Image 1 (tube, rainbow, N blue to C red):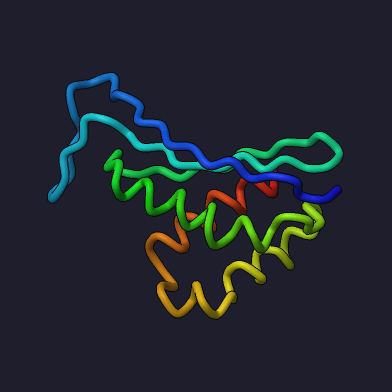
Image 2 (cartoon, rainbow, N blue to C red):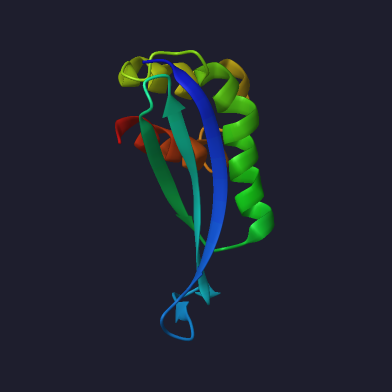
Length: 116
């Protein structure tokens, strides 16, 4: 069961109230950034992460998935999830630019897609 493709997406979903706030932020939409992973056997997995629906930031997450993680996953065995997570999480070039933030948010969406 080899990984044949990854497709990234961004959804901005309006809240069912005018806005929600915490001590520092107010949002009117919830961002959903994610990926769909397809395998050679026809299985599809979806993984998501939540954001503040800021399009430029959400594009950074999808570009991390598309440009950093997808090339390392294509052709890999989708069932070997723990090894794939370590491969992505410990990839030196990505670790160098960030062990938190965008790289981990992107990794979370990929990890969920592999488990579904």
